[in-house]
Length: 140
Picture 1 (cartoon, rainbow, N blue to C red):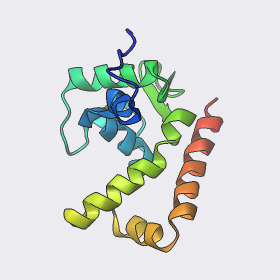
Picture 2 (picture 1 turned 120 degrees about the vertical axis):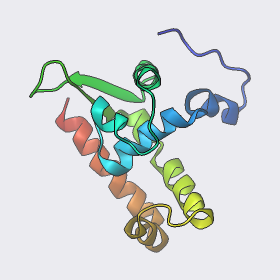
Picture 3 (picture 1 turned 135 degrees about the horizontal axis):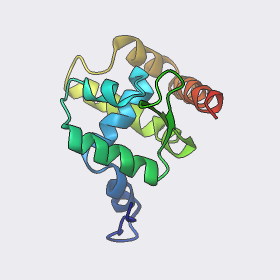
């Protein structure tokens, strides 16, 4: 896959080059918050991503080292996607955006996650990251 041409040295612009379209961000959300890991699971998300866009975004996220892709041990024509350390590093940003969206567009995130973040944001983020790392390392 061709590299992304960055528009400037601005860190916000750099971030948006990778995550500026909603589909990439929603795929990452689905892995982080809902434990999704297959093409079919992503396709079933309520936002109804088109198959060609889903394939394109999964390829881009893998090429840019946000995701890993491996063949399913159960079915050789099925792939399993997991976040890399680079993808896992996005947890704080995803949680902040989820909290912001929950405030202005209830019900937002699941209430248990909102409550956990309000009680101990740092600990909750660390726990989510650790869970994602355990899945990543289990599959290495």
